[in-house]
Image (cartoon, rainbow, N blue to C red; front, side, top):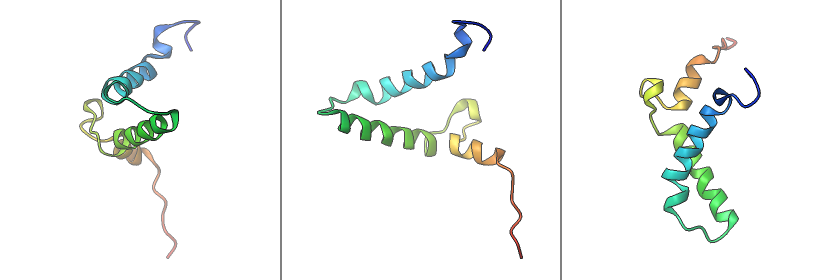
Length: 76
């Protein structure tokens, strides 16, 4: 953290929540908190597995993360 209240501290989280609100929450009228929670969890699953991101070279977050993981050699 650069300092208290620096805009850079939350910029990525704020951008994610903006996407969640405009692409999921504002489009649905939830009957209960449990319905909202399950719907938002489905959105996050789609967001990470199926939605390509321009900042990741049109890869999904799961694909971009998998490339960074170290490879483990299998025992013969």
